[in-house]
Image (cartoon, rainbow, N blue to C red; front, side, top):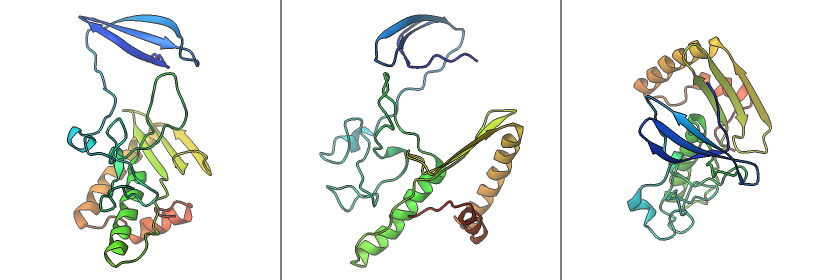
Length: 205
């Protein structure tokens, strides 16, 4: 597999893709013509049109703006979590990119939202904040990569990554475990909570 970084597709013709590659200052350094018999494009994420049109709810790309409590600053009865929220890029890049949002990070957002809605209904101040910690098992067929980032957005207290065939089997095992706990209706069993706590991984600040 060959990578072309800092690049974007300018056009596609039958059996051929045209790609511009940039340096760190955003100047074109090379033009690529890539022949293909089969290709797949993943367009950049954007928000849902009907939500994006609400004044003050979203950023220009249609992602929902939230404060530290996962609540929209203008519409305080709207909370948001996951891939639909606006997170600034970690750093400026020649080709604009977004910040990744992983499963455990989203779980921490939802946990904060549930507690904050409960407190809001009870007339209490909102105090719960998600840690945005990241735990990921990325399956790549016969191998994979595992990483822990605490928190996901730099600066980080922990940045750990390993790869190998064991990640593939760990992903299969986790899938079966996750489906089982969802069927039982337990999102965070006590043993999972204490194992993660022992590793210094928490959902809430």
